[in-house]
Structure formats: structure tokens, C-alpha cells
Image (cartoon, rainbow, N blue to C red; front, side, top):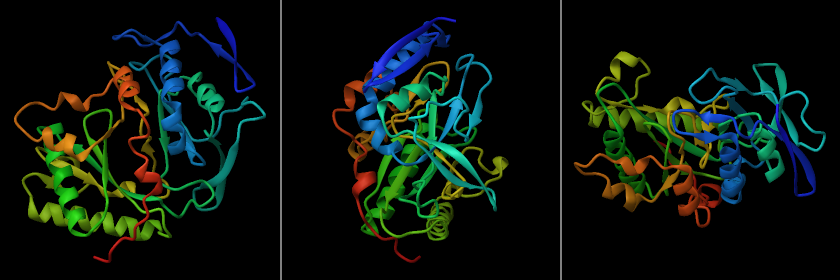
Amino acid sequence: MSVNTVKVAGRELALSNLEKDLYPSYGFTKARVLEYYGRIAPVLLPHLRDRALTLKRYPDGADAEYFFEKRCPAGRPAWLKTAEIPYGSKKKLTACLVNDLQTLLWVENLASLELHVPLARAATPGKPDSVVFDLDPGDGAGLRDCVKVALMLKGLFDGMKLFSCVKTSGKKGLHVFVPLNTAADFGKTKAFSKAVAGVLQKSYPALVTAQMAKELRKGRVFINWSQNDAAKTMVAVYSLRAGPVPTVSFPLAWKELQGLNGPAAPAELQVTPAEAVARAQGDLFRDLLVKKQELPYL
């Protein structure tokens, strides 16, 4: 096993197997994964800060077996920050907090291609900072259908005077967020998201479903409201996604999304690491962290 020692912010990191191809069908090595995360770190880190990280590790590459790791791995350096978070009804576990570049690169050295975080910070696990609507196309539906549903959601939120923002999932769907950054709890956010999903299902039954059953998703977009839960995580904005080609969960402007609501296939929604670095001149998702608003009662 080849090991390279580098110094990051005064910390020595041992980075191993940099030549290993983590996206074999594309030719994207661990060195390039580390390079991407190092370059995107200024805009990524605020979205990871103080949130319990769930690692999604691909030790043999994106086309091989993977595993989720909620516990911060054993053998972590003494300087790495952690938090004790609820696990089940009575237990707790120790999770990694990725608050700086050296921790981010240490995590990526473990081949955690994807970074998943909860909607709440570790210190306040029952208080989400936002509401999320995870748009997942069923068989026979696609990204174009997700675009339509996302724009419907925006129209609904505009009518409620709620700011919303959207990002690609990095795979086949979209994630629409309503930032809160106020005193909310998951009971309220889940009830709100379920009610909104139900309204769209009733209004557009041929396009939208709010029901979990996969057989009911055929040709429709499933609005996964259940992600608004203290036990659930979402892939972080700017995170890589595993697949044949490395893609990024990337923010979009609503005007950009409106331009894709046409007959052409929205290939623009698949953002590569190089494109992400070039386009992320400043945090395009900053409003998610700073915009304060209250949910209406439905």
C-alpha cells in the first residue's frame, strides 16, 4: 500500500493508495477525489459544520460494494472533532464532525465518496434548519418530470411567501429545500411536507405521488416527505455521488431550472466535479444556512 504524508493546516495526514481508481469506468482516482474535495471545501464545509456525518464508503470503487458508517471510525486522529448523538430510543453513538479541511480529507481518504448529513445540527438533533422535498422519479418518469414538480413546489411556496431553493441529487432526482433557521421541530416539518406532498398529489395525480409504495410510483414523481425526520440524512450539497461517472449534488438557480422545463432532455442537471468547481464561485446555496422564516399552519 502506497502512502503519501501531507501537511494540512498544521496537521499531518497519511493519504493512501492515491492511484486507486474509484470510478473505474470513468478513470477518476482517489487523488482526484481528494483534489475535488479540497477545491470545493470552502463552499462545502459550512453545510457540514457541526452536523453528524454519515459516511458512505466505497473501498473498492463506485461500482463495487459500499457501506454506510454512522459511527466515527476507530483509529481516528485525536484532533478530529466528534459529537455524541441519539441512536435509537435510549442509546448514543459517536459521530464525526467535519468542520475543517483536514477532517474532510481524512474522511475522503477512507473512500467516503458520498457525504450524508441530517437536517439538524448535532447539538440540537430535534430542531431541523430546513424542510426538504426529495423528488424521486419512478419507472417511466425522469428528470424532466422532477423539474416540473420542483417548479410546482416553488409556485406553491411563493404563494405562501416562503423562500425555497433547489439542488440536483447528483443522480436522477432533485431536492427542494425551504430554509427555516428558527425554532422548529421535526413533528412540524414532517406534517408540513406531508401536507404539501398530498396537495400536489391531489392536484396532479398523473404526475405526483406522495405514497411510499413503489408500485404507485410508476410514471410519477414521488415526493419523499419522510426525509424530514431526526433519524434520516440527505446527501450534502456539493457532495460527490457514486455511479459510472462522478457527479455532484449541485445547487441550481430557479431561472436555470425554468430554462430546462422544455422538450430537451435536461442533461445540464448532471454536474461533473470540474464543472462544480468552476461554477461554485461563492456558495450558491448560502441562503439555506442564513435565511430565517417560519412555516405557516396548513
